[in-house]
Length: 429
Image 1 (cartoon, one colour):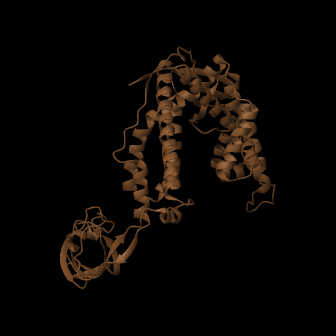
Image 2 (image 1 turned 60 degrees about the vertical axis):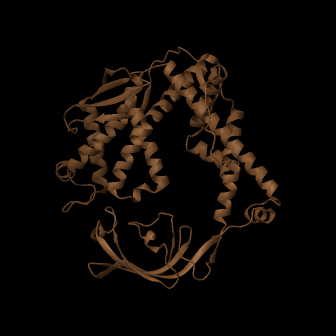
Image 3 (image 1 turned 90 degrees about the vertical axis):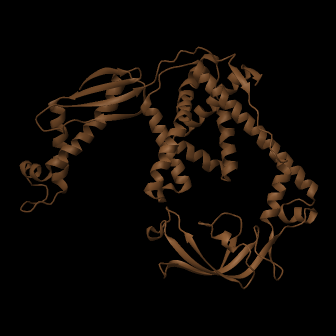
């Protein structure tokens, strides 16, 4: 095997790997020996079909299989021989398929770890993050939200006209060009007036009606309606108001606290909300401070980053988001623009994360920052507790899937960030 390396960028290399004819032929021989043992060829007993017959029937498959075997056997050996510290997966340029009786050459593009010179870690200038002051007291706002969520729907008094805030119970029938359509009717459907959850001003037409009243009106359907036949079309609706309900909010007292929480008094519930909201704001401030530190740290220590590494991390992040939000079930017309927007919004953040992942080990090495095995165990214990799983199960999973190194790298990053943050010049903005 002959290997040559070409520098195609600051952190990119192209390997050309030449495999001699003897190795190519050996790979083809091995493939056809295996095929001969298992193939059923008409006119020949198992294991007795001649090579030329096998080549006629399995020649194309043989070239693809041999290509895979040769690459698996030589690529990582070539990288090792060339002493390349490769990041991410190699990108193969296979060229023509291998053939018996000829040498075979292919190319592979790889990203290599950049040479990083640490310029600045201590003394980074940061502005202290400030959270906006909420318009309403957050505890009071949360309590009011709890009241709204635990409100009871009660029948409105007779003769009251429907207004914003009421829940109207209606029977309706819709017609397009005089004919009902699928999903055009319902009985005792509930609509909260003023919530803005209908289209074309439908709920506005119910305002002022009294129970028993019937009303007909036209609604222009939205242009993006799921049913193409209805898009931007005028539909005639006939509606009858069969009931009217109002939300009755519970009193804000000790009984309410017992109903919505594990506390016995409203004062205890109030104190718990105050504590949790305070902890949340403190955590958000810390997150903002950490983000500012990371941005300053990577800006103060520039180095080239492999674009392919950023792109692969970006794709992985978006894939996780799609799985989390069920994006795979979205219509392509919705999914395409959504992914494009995520790519644009997330790329700077992902690049910073990649830079930090490459920078942190170098800073840790220079500053003598390390993660002890006891810290790994403690982190695994926290993961087990948060996921409500047995610690032994979590440890086994991380070891079997090779995740311990990634866990250690993450803890190193956190220590490096905390180290730089403690040594930063933080001023009020």
